[in-house]
Image (cartoon, rainbow, N blue to C red; front, side, top):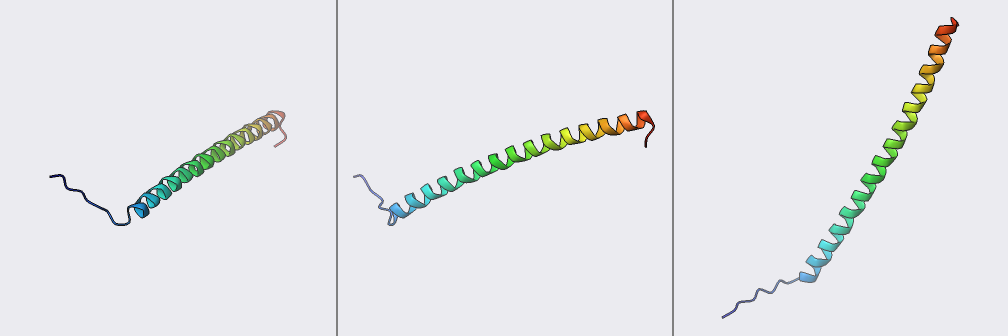
Amino acid sequence: MTEFVHLIGAEDVRSAGSAMRAAAEGMKCAAALIEDSLQRHRMFLDDWLLRLENIIKKEVKNGTT
């Protein structure tokens, strides 16, 4: 004889699982956006520092420090 188990509130469990899945996807998306933003910020700062370094080298070479 086959036995069945009926879970009370199974729809609530399914709904909660779906909500958790959606929340996890949202968190992954937010993390990717933050990572991209930080990468672009790092590139900006690296470029800025390179420009500053070139200006300082030029000034040192010209003896105007």
